[in-house]
Image (cartoon, rainbow, N blue to C red; front, side):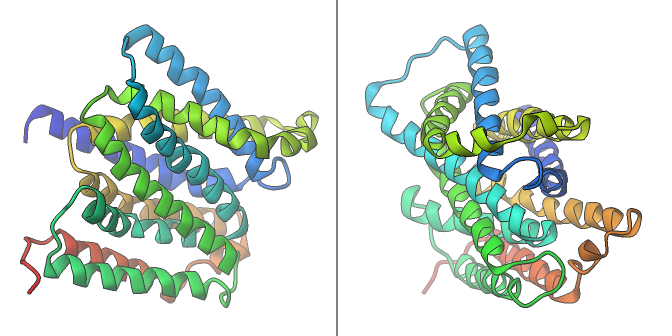
Length: 304
């Protein structure tokens, strides 16, 4: 591997460690301090300013008119829908469930890549997709029956987040072949903010900003500066050098980080409802998804 490939893998590692921390950090202030929709609006608005400031300083590039539709689609999938589904989902379910469900993203990326990027279907990819898909469906359904902070609706919303993010990775890859990564992300966030704004006016007006504590601002700052600004730059840098299926495979770090954070939160801070979120069913579900994507990543054999 050349230097850029090594840097891309390092970028993906860092981004997914941050994502793993985000499951429990972002959940900590919703909904008692801020609603998920208002949080998404603040996240997008701040990052539009940050990304466009960066672009004006370093990247002088215009976009062809015919590509704005795909950029708008990236904004819908990778910013608006992705963030709304995630924040509303994590608000209603367990951080552990959310991190496990998100591991199905590589499977969804492969499915979308098969149809959009014409990646070849193989026996291993077919079997792996089935195994991982069954595990994800089982975990989503199990959320309605388990104890702790899990829920069927929350798990389903997180799955929708995984689907929108997976499709975004594939659509963004087609634009990466033509434009600088920063150009793509700037327009994506701008379109995402435009899509979210009509739904955010009322939640923002209802937010009690006077009731924000130092912890509230620290959490919002972490989500804006690290979970959004830093991770999107890292992911787009990696996507510019390696395939979407490799980019998405790093998502398996997230359950490990999430399990560790929930364990600390449950046993050190004595949060019993979080302790109930860790059980054999969820561990087995996570294992099945990992096995499924391992099979997908094995050397290809043509489907007969």
